[in-house]
Length: 625
Image (cartoon, rainbow, N blue to C red; front, top):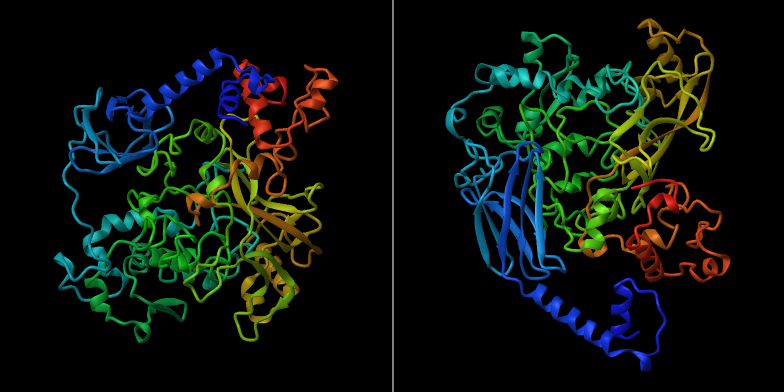
């Protein structure tokens, strides 16, 4: 097709023409379009607006520049990055941040070719951030410094003399309590929930009966967390788990003690060189959740801590952004924001979003066609097209668990005898609408089979295509067999300490019934009959972001059902019985036959035509936007 013909279609005209019949008016219009595009490409770089809206808690910086150039906006005083954008086809760029950490007094914008501009922020509060030059980050771990350099280790309580306030912060956190306010749970949101408060999943189920084993990743030295703070509870906090990568520990008579034989530094050196948490420290627990490296989350593995493989994760690779966990999970008083859909407690109720991270602007693509998706499609959906990837420089496999079979015994020959796991690499996510709320099963709740899937659901994201607060997100999906009390229709928390010692699923189930009955949990009695059922869970994917070139293309979603069925279970089908066409009762049968969308170009052509004519979504679909 000629460029002139493409121009006509881009302006929304639906017409047929012969090259010999192109009018001089069309040629003139096309020349005007070329001149307009040239003007956009060569706009002078500047900031047009820098405003703070206290009412909306929103900072807006926008301006003009050269088409395709990247723009970075910083606090003019400190050079702290506020956000980034790309100049779009019209020569415009914009960054909008909700609830920023601080409001700058003055901002500086710099285009990737070196052009820059500064402007005072209109409406900035009197205590706006004037900015001070950032201090270089400390080495990790740093050498002995300040008051730490002469310390000697005197047990976990060593830190309390100076950091009692911080210990109180940690005591109330999800990392210590293993439970918290369940703000985004649709069931029992008024209750404290978590793995230490009734949470059940499709991995080890529930910790009832095996605190001694499960607590190896708890930040205490052995005692279970209590609701009321006390000196003994504060002394139970093991600060070095997070603040010293060289620290190792082992269990001795139920208490975690330093494992100096496997350490490269002494305990005195350990407390003298404490440091902020590192990726390695966080991943020591978070990558090995569920029983081994990469088993549980699907997008986190030990390789995430040190890989140089840019294809594996552009954010975490040392050749990429090389981010620390805290760059996104910005900690406040030892509480962390951000969590998976399957995690019950909310430690710090603040969003972890690309647009407000200081790294990406509200219009990150520099394309109106792509940027209009961000209101309804999460960044992860396009930028995590595959998960459970193997890092190219890791000797281990980063395969993740997709099914767990307790009844099959164990492949291990020495304890702990873990159940039979099915694992896989390079998996395609499952896609669901999510409004940030989830329905997660709690111990003692009645549960019923989903007749469409034949499974018993332990974690399901809530949301729908017609909900304005929902976006389309990618999820890991996995299953597991699990015992169900026939009388009460409640899942039984099998005793993992029994299974790990014997690989006997029935013995672990009977022991689990005894545990629940002895604790007085309603619905459980010693000797109750049980059966085995299939449980499932959805887990939000946030890591292993692929390079831009590997992001999903339009055809990945719109012209195929191999990855996701937009017109099927995701609810975008037209209301008529002919989803392959635009027919919805507005056009006759001949039009419906002619307008069948056989390509992405067809889809864009007819879909944009209807939108341009003001046709509302609900005239063709079952929802409105």
